Amino acid sequence: MRKWNERFTSSYRELKHARTVTVCALMGAAAIVLGSLSIYVTDTIRIGFSGIPNKIVHYLFGPVTGSLFAGTMDVLKYLVKPSGPFFPGFTLVTMAAGLIYGCFFYKRTLSFGRVMAAHLAVALVCNVFLNTACLSFLYGKGMAVLLPPRLVKNLIMWPIDSIIFYHVAKALDMAGVFRALRGNRASA
Image 1: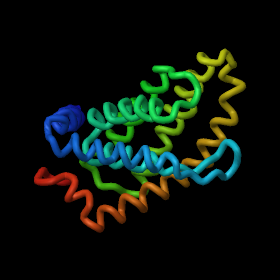
Image 2 (image 1 turned 30 degrees about the vertical axis):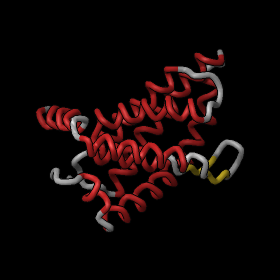
Image 3 (image 1 turned 120 degrees about the vertical axis):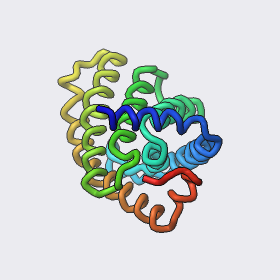
Image 4 (image 1 turned 60 degrees about the vertical axis):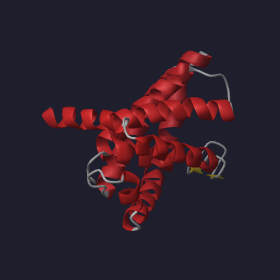
């Protein structure tokens, strides 16, 4: 329990550094630009790259900074390119995903198993259950109707998203990008 408290406290302290805010701003801009680059496999399944900068923030700065960043980016992305009505529930779900990724990644070795586990947790908890509950509430459709196709889609995307993020993160780590972005603070 003490280790978790230290991680959350450390992640909260990250917000006090100008470098953290600057890196978050750069990653936010990258996420918005990458949001326009998607590969549509079917009408409902697309491979997107805008989540990569978000996960980098979660990895570098932890669950507190990551969840605040995720919530901010959700609102900014909606303002830049609205799709459907704004619903604060989706922002809260996005923040929960940031919290989960931050808990899995922050100050930990980035292994493929850890990336797969984090993506599965977010896919099931946030994408399948919480987002489906928000859609059900927003549009008045039963969760039983919405759940099966969303579950299938997320199970298909789970390994794809995991592979993409893992390889991009490993390449950035090997190139020394994470060390540079962290600055003088201790690395994970």
